Length: 445
Ligand code: IFM
Image 1 (cartoon, rainbow, N blue to C red):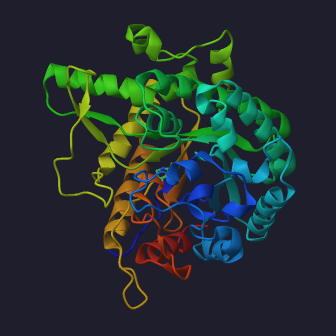
Image 2: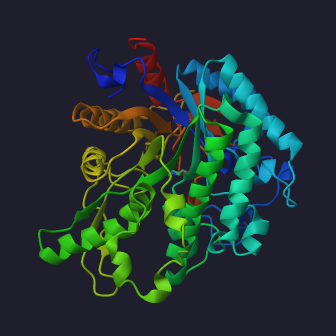
């Protein structure tokens, strides 16, 4: 497969449907010298944490090449660009504004306006300022308050020039990977941490929503969650129960409090030390009405029963894997969307991330990434089917605009539809970018 097509009748061809590309600050910006340290700088500095021993000091040098990057985005014909603001670039340690940092994002916003591209801003994509971590990070509820103060400054500064604000990106990753299993920054381990970090993140989201409503009432405000829909490894009752338990811990734990103001019932069976401390009023702060829910989807997870934790993840039983070792499973996206739509009263949905890491090769100026095109094609089909069955999906963002720092995997895993040569910073549109562009240019608009 080397092209992407939308049928004339497809709901994805509706002129109001938004297509975009996505990135995040730490993964692309570089220019470490002009911001404060973050937990990822510290994490990268410890040997063994990052597969290729790299860091985000230089990355894609987006702070230097932002203009050409935005022009490249415009060439793709997208409606929107999803990027994150680095908290550590816009706020100094004493809480005052970093004027140069704010000016950088202001230039981005102005250029996006000029190019007629909507700005989808993520306010927290994992790069917590290190000094806040030194005070306990997401295990300290004061971090939620500090986040709201930061959001107040940013949303007063940029206001409604921003089409959409997402408070958090993937709080499960911040809380579980960062504070419970320790494979992401800040690298803490312990079952007693994960749910507490998650609670403080959700609280930060709720407080920030209140600020956004005040400072940018007509921008769309919401949050982005990642989901790996849970499947049972067999039809055995215990495996079905294991998959359900994992789903409650990893998926519903984040969505239910946002929509219904309460955690899944499994909270009652958890050991006391693993439960979060919930203060009076927290759940109503967390469950502020959302304009949208961003959903990031890459793959499913298959579980079997296990004595120790009740569930354990099974390695994929297929050769159809991306370079991350993640199963290509588009049907999981359709099932996720239709299941969530049945279970909850959902706000508008954006697919805020979807894409594949492929072991791409740049040969004679070309990257022929047929597998990525096929991945995008099958997942766009799933989105289309979900819309046809009644899920209110308003947009889709390919992850990622360009190859970048893939966290604990460093620069070895390439998710971009644009290839980056990290020696020269040369960007090259892969076949997938050309296919995405051609699909977008052929729309009904
Ligand atoms: O690169 C990440 C991104 O930062 C968050 N969502 C998943 C992507 C791929 O792992």
